[in-house]
Length: 285
Image 1 (tube, rainbow, N blue to C red):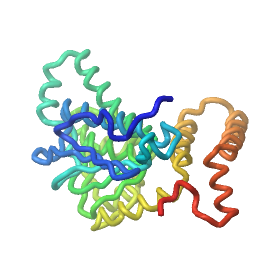
Image 2: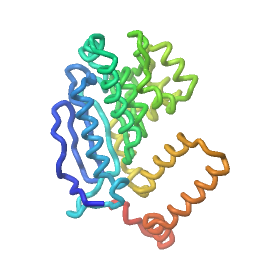
Image 3: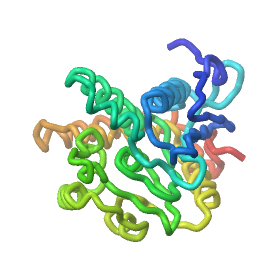
């Protein structure tokens, strides 16, 4: 696999930004004037940044550094600028949908599906910081993240039902996050729930008045974990989600995977560092 220098060919964007600090990338939505509502341009820009960070992740490259010594990515922090995380679909995009053909609406839905799937399957550990509201597609973004921190006053909703439509594209991700009964309830009610209820049902992971402080502690924790182990853990989960063979076949597959990881370069380094009572080579000083 060819080498990718970490700073090369970064996509140009105007509705969101990407900042790279060592092994951590910060993707921020910047349409704060419309509460970071998702329009075609913003969705396309997010996808381009997710693709770029994926290609420059440790999980994808199998290495901690590029040819110049710069760190490949291990963590992706996703946030929205201003008062609100993401108010869902842009009203103009929703209005235009009514005048589009079924084929054109299908193309728009495919673009959204690519956004959510790219975030869900991203090889980095993904952290979300949520303030204000996260509605419709904003709630879908939350469901695709690995660890979500919310302010106590945040409000989240699968709000599509209020418009007479369904949270279908975001549905698989929310369903996996909260389970069948809660997904059904939230989809039918379509109303906003508070931060504490979101925490109770497992849609988010932490409440805090200081999103940055908690974000920093989570990043520190993730960076002590084997970077390939982080990426492979996500693949492991995806494998479990999609498993359709017998239980015995699954058990055999997990035995093979365990043997593979124990014999890997990272697995050997982790074991050696433990026995030698020293930090592993992926742990930053």
